[in-house]
Length: 197
Image (cartoon, rainbow, N blue to C red):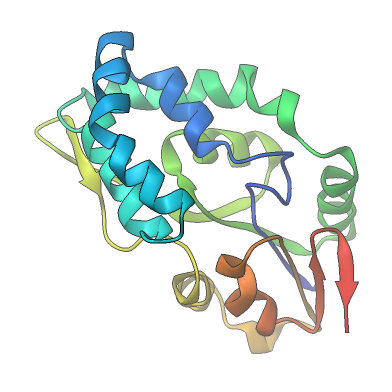
């Protein structure tokens, strides 16, 4: 019977948050500059702890991507996954992911990051994905589709994908408070690269 391995992405498999990197990569420069001014109070509030991560990210996606052609965003996501993400991966974490994959474990990346770049990356790695999804209408981005995949939503997404009782053991890897709920469901857990009892 295989194990189930759940990996957060940003900060766990990577050396830094990739959501801001992608937004800078995908948003046209004039819109990026205007958005930086418009979002300055939100970003300031987030850094001071006054505004949560979910509304901050939702505001950034609205300002940066709303109305943009979805095909363009996903094409940029595929290029970002191929050209940019390899440079920010943690070798030790990627070795652990490869270890699980080679054992025949079921590996799922569970991330608050966007499907635009995480889906092509996970497909290239041969692993499954549960993440935040961009919504579109008439071929253009409208914002997030449903809840962002953070906190308790990570557990709900895992339950929607699989019956955890069918696995010999569950391994989970995370690095922030948004991963605590996912870590709590695991038999073996690591936080910021260190095993937890």
